[in-house]
Length: 231
Image 1 (tube, rainbow, N blue to C red):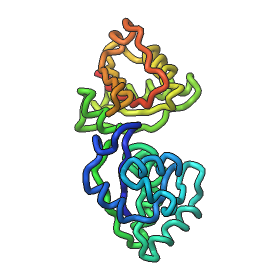
Image 2 (spheres, rainbow, N blue to C red; image 1 turned 90 degrees about the vertical axis):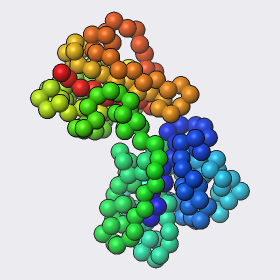
Image 3 (cartoon, rainbow, N blue to C red; image 1 turned 135 degrees about the horizontal axis):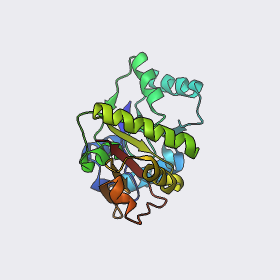
Image 4 (cartoon, one colour; image 1 turned 60 degrees about the vertical axis):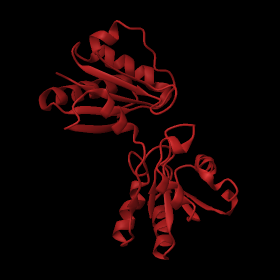
């Protein structure tokens, strides 16, 4: 099974992906994908435009069951090479594809990863915060009171351990989460906003909470990673 990264947004895939990825997808006929429409669009832009309708796609996403993953690993058991695609970025990282990778190992299927963009690591490396110890916390609670409590808990953990904390949010809730950070975090806590990473509209800024509170910044409905660290 080949773990194939995809770009983090629209644009030329060759600007963020390596040549071996384009070479391997030319040889594959079967893909397990998070979303078929975006997968077809990516593969078309990556050089398979004339072959898209000859390919086989299986979806594995938040709506899929363990039985679905078992069915897909059976294809691998037949000796068929399969490409695993996330909708954006690295497959199996903050992505439902991890369940299939785990099954592949249990079934003795060789797993081959390829280099590609990770919004989480790109945000961390460009934040200026501690890259020696960090944790990805996924999505925080939707309700503001619970979300604020979780932000405070992670801020305390960061202060105690020096560990950088990373989280993400659904784009339409970006500014709501941002407001909660500004409302509950200590003035000296460092917060990096990393939006539209690798895209022409990329925004990566690290400031203290007190500095952010003096600005009138809005993230908007863009893919965004929040990286923060308390001192």
